[in-house]
Length: 135
Image (cartoon, rainbow, N blue to C red; front, side):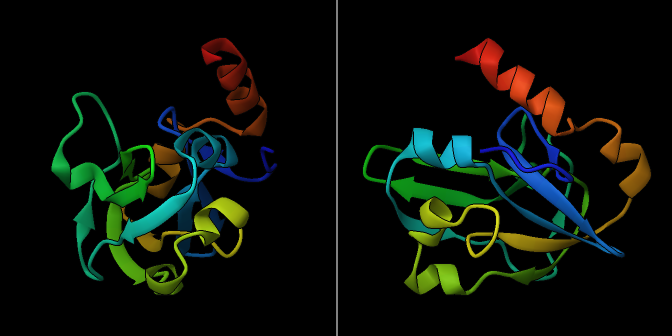
């Protein structure tokens, strides 16, 4: 499932613009590949984050997802400051699996270069094509 109206990274994160803020999470594709999520490490509110690029560095990370299969880093689709985290994931990490686009979001960012950085992300159509190529 890929939602329209969101922006996507090659690392399988999504970004939803909500006025001056951006809600961030991992895609349905990512959660399926990871398997049952048992722990989520969230970023600190106030943390400055950079948009994911190559080479990847720790200041591009917004957390980790731990499943019974692996631990996966969650990268930021945009640069900015973490304004809010989804504290529900501390007690219910499985929300990432059951509701990746709604209840399982990771954090909310105040972006620093929204328009310029959105151009580097994929829309839903391009993300679907990307998934087809990597399968």
